[in-house]
Amino acid sequence: MTGEDAALTQKINSLKKEKKAVILAHNYQPGEVQDIADVVGDSLELSQKAAKSDAEVIVFCGVSFMAETASILCPDKTVLLPELSAGCPMADMITADQLRRKKQELPAATVVCYINSTADVKAEADICCTSANAVEVVTSLDNNQIIFVPDQYLGHYVSTKVDKDYCLWPGYCPAHARIQPEHILEAKEAHPQAKVVVHPECRPEVIDLADAVLGTGGMCRYARREDVGQLIVATEVGMIYRLKKDNPAKQFYPALEQAVCADMKRISLAKVLRSLETLTPEVKVPEDTRLKAKLAVDRMLEVA
Image 1 (spheres, one colour):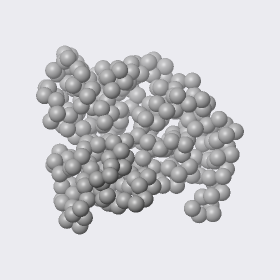
Image 2: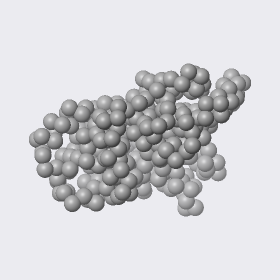
Image 3: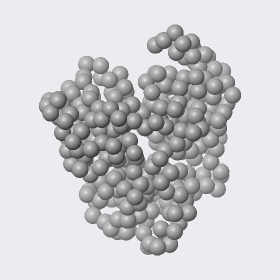
Image 4: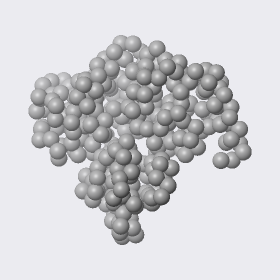
């Protein structure tokens, strides 16, 4: 840690106590931001822990839909996103109006919405899912006709596990879509003893090369296994920092160094400090939207 980072960290820790705040960081955040967080994890896990905490202020080091999810689950807390421009290209690939039109085309379908979506889109869905529980959520549904938004690749992965009639929205995560089969094959050639773990947001042909297909929380658990000494990781590269920190005796290799989410890297220690000093920028989901979106999230939590 540099002297500047140490000084910022000291100020952040002092203000955090003063403002009764909790700092949450997603697994893809820069290492120095992960290091000052009270909790590091995936988006839903972080929001759930925030809801259970007695903190009055949530500083969410992630992207906009994650802060919205925290607002949905924690309406009485102040939710801050240190960089308001930190968005999610995949979440922006569908709007509530577009989903409403698709529902009119397929009125009998059940809408399954990936948690990586805006609050407005969640509010139009029947049920949410995460990368970890998507298969379980779709399995639980009586309806055979599914509209899956916004990630076509996660939807395709679910379709290989649960036999239903799917309408997959053509959204995708640019960072995961950059990872190609040849990147996995090259990494396996360079590290023949390594297992391969792939995020379900990746392309189907990349998923086919995996030893395990897991979300970020699942990757953390998988890395702790005794039979895993080396791991090729096909997801956003920020995950490598978390895995190395948790498992210092093991070796981790990114499937692609260029699998970077620029939005996830917009948050810095200086911006976290500024948020605590000013209690801005605040993310607040309007109550009517919040209640509809929360219904879709609650239905998911009843299943998985």
